[in-house]
Image 1 (cartoon, rainbow, N blue to C red):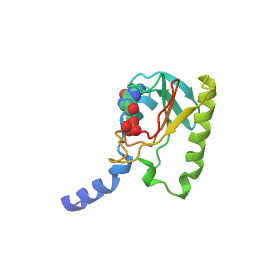
Image 2 (tube, helix red, strand yellow):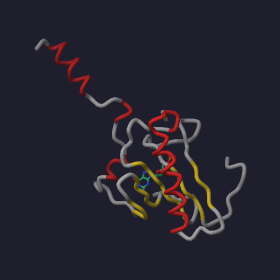
Image 3 (cartoon, protein in one colour):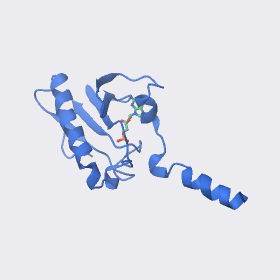
Image 4 (cartoon, rainbow, N blue to C red):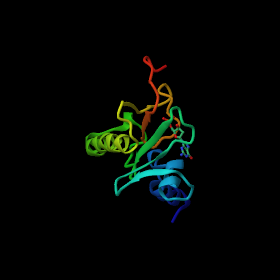
Length: 133
Ligand code: DGP
């Protein structure tokens, strides 16, 4: 095979930017430790390494499927997005956040997103402020 053909084949097989692994893949694969609070076949939730509230949990889909950020959502993602919201409620109850809590998705640079594997922040255990800043 000519080297240009080989390069083209390799580049076709290479993961796209949307498939690029993040630190969250290592957490899913248990390659790095995390404090898991919920896990099922579709979602994983663990305590944020840099908590912004007494309870700060990150909820992620186990299969990213191109969902690096909310802005990449397509119709096929509707079910998983709804599922993450439902799991946020389940975990809030599990964590005893009866008085309420905040659910946040940061999107992109202006949204202060740092890890490009869509995730929901569940924050609680203190009075939240508005506007959030
Ligand atoms: P965001 O800025 O919305 O992309 O949030 C990413 C969050 O992920 C941030 O609050 C810190 C958290 N985080 C990043 N790396 C790790 C890690 O290795 N372990 C845990 N537990 N949390 C992490």
